[in-house]
Length: 147
Image 1 (cartoon, rainbow, N blue to C red):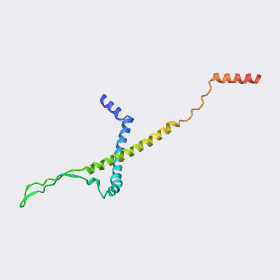
Image 2 (cartoon, rainbow, N blue to C red):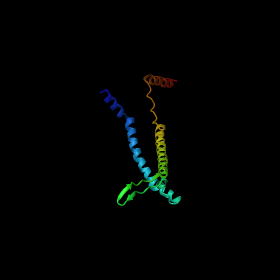
Image 3 (tube, one colour):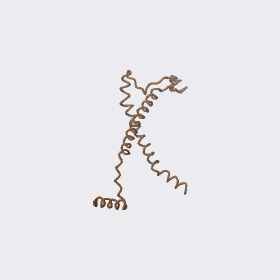
């Protein structure tokens, strides 16, 4: 039972829940940014460099081999080509750089907001004078009146 209680205490800590929410939102945000990169940013870049779709760039390491047939009987199965898809790698690097930049901007913005909150604390009200201070002030005022 102690193990379950310890796990419950760990899992329900504010930091763990905040982290879980951050991971979920980050995953959704990553999909949005990946879509922006793939569908909005990369097509114009591909157009500028000659109508290239980066995701289709590849190097053929081994050509595809068609199936060998003897009449209606397949003697040897077809073999797929072996490709080095460096274009998809470039696309993923662009995705990462843009996502990292967007997260950097968000963190910078949030940090700026939290600094403003820390810099603007409400001024503390003046403390109420103690009974001794009140009595001494009255004595001082009475002595001023007698002079």
